Amino acid sequence: MLFDQEFETLPREALEALQLKRLVATAKRVYARVPFYKKTFDGAGIKPSEIKSLKDLRRLPFTNKIDLRDNYPFGLFAVPMEQVVRIHASSGTTGKPTVVGYTRRDINTWAELMARSLGAAGAHKNDIIHNAYGYGLFTGGLGVHYGAEKLGASVIPISGGNSKRQIVIMQDFGSTVLTCTPSYALSLAETAEEMGVDFKKLKLKVGIFGAEPWSEKMRDDIERKLNIQAIDIYGLSEVIGPGVSIECLEAKRGLHIFEDHFIPEIIDPKSGEVLPYGQKGELVFTTITKEAFPLIRYRTRDISVLYAEACKCGRTHVRMERVSGRSDDMLIIRGVNVFPSQIESVLMNIEGVEPHYLLIVDRQGALDTLEVHVEVNEKVFSDEVKNLQSLGKRIEKDIKDLLGVNAGVKLVGPKTIQRSEGKAQRVIDKRRI
Amino acid sequence: MKVEQISVFLENKPGALTEVTRILGEGGINIRALSLADTKDFGILRLIVNDNEKAKSILIARGFTVRKTEVVAVEVPDRPGGLADILKCLSQSKINVEYLYAFVQQSGANAIIIFRFDETDRAIEVLSKNGVKILEGKKVYAL
Image 1: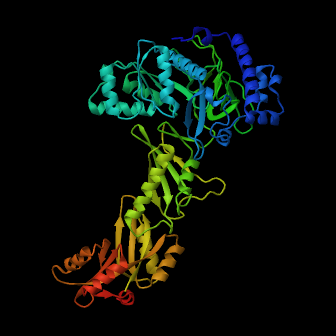
Image 2 (image 1 turned 90 degrees about the horizontal axis):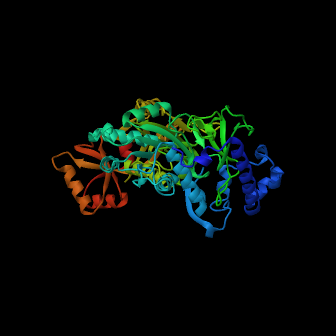
């Protein structure tokens, strides 16, 4: 279903004219209001008034995640705090999270885009949307929630966890649309099976899954086990949250990027050069309607491909291929972004512990597991088992507190972990997604 | 009155214990007593040997994490209730035993048990006051 017939099917020419108008306005605003952008624009030798066509976008400087950290927490906001009505955050590359803000209009834009996304997945106002994304600083829960209300559907704000209750509510309330991470969907399938509940007898018809990488194989799995259509959604809090792009139910091939709000580019992650449609590279987004937290050429580190062929659903917006990897070392574990450097900062904060570590990521059943190998040196070694065990527990707790991820610590012998000489292998990802 | 014990961190994997004992054997170190504490993921090997310094340095040179700890070697009468009597005087003084393990050899008619206490000095005081015989390090290493 097209939630916004006019804008979702805007002819390319009109869409591009709109993009240019909005891009110029955004560039002028950030140049005038955000010292960071004035500095980077000046550094690149470009004035917002020199942007004459969409091609000029590539003359603008990139924004990186580290720039967000350097301006922590509110340094990149382009409006005074009195106009900010919501703050969200996601993990940064070290201890500090990445903070984003929204004006009332931004929240409305986001709700519209999520309503479009739900519509693209076939949802309408008669649906009961079972929203099992986490509510909180993470944009997943509230993003879907506002979109579902905007659509006029009935939303169940169940958030994540407590799988048995999820199944009971799905059964009793007659949920028709499920929104959560793809791995949690598979975990719910396992729970239902243990409870003797048959998904074929439930009213669920479609699921909208995102916030972590998945594959066509997982889609087949989910569709079979939950007896639903599984739709891929993409978003990141820096850009707006979920609702940056989504697959349509008609084609289920590529995710339509809402180009009237975001301009996507694909670049070569090494050279920074813009690549033509059809070539694989790193996704870069420029937001052209956001007020509180506009972003110019933000490097997502997500690897994808853009293609412009017309889609049978009627949307004129370009599609991006399902994200196939990262150009940095970020891991997504149960929907949570984890940078190995964050684990390192946890270890460095514990007296005596070596900052050498190895992360083993695996998947048991449907859920990701994270094992952290930490070396036992003379400073932390003890002849008593309980002391070593409490060291392990302490590290696990600090990781949980900082990252919100459950990790298991395994203590290993000294100097058994490869040292960082140039390129140490810090991560072993055994998941077959 | 205290005895030095060395502890070695062992990863829970096949061959870990073999390697430690082989290295000690090649270094001419004689193990007098030992105990292995094991968990799901790791083990702690505790040893009383004839030459602590040498044992420690050769293990460290081979990449092991080693630590010295002070423990107490106590002579326990080799009769029913012998150990219970000793533990009773410790518990009355609210001293905790972290762990203990037995020596293979005897000292005369008595068994020898290695104790790790939470308060080593006070434990020695309490034991001496109660007439329990404590062995000196020198004697233990040479047993």
